[in-house]
Length: 96
Image (tube, rainbow, N blue to C red; front, side):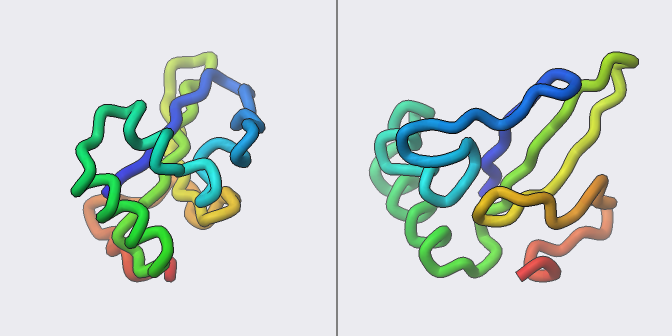
């Protein structure tokens, strides 16, 4: 399961009432419902977040001024865990 946020150039992840964007606290039932997920999908994601078993991958995609995209994998806080991963060989469980 992927959760991602796209930002332009040096824009930062926003701070909300429930926590910083893409943090575990921010990924609430309400937020997932707003994203159009059904109850089963919401339950699966919330369980995976609680279990911290690698089923949820959080990506920050940054569109740089020159048009290049920078992709980073984030942890639960969200702090960058992996910069520019090679998704051809990347395995979710590697970052747990």
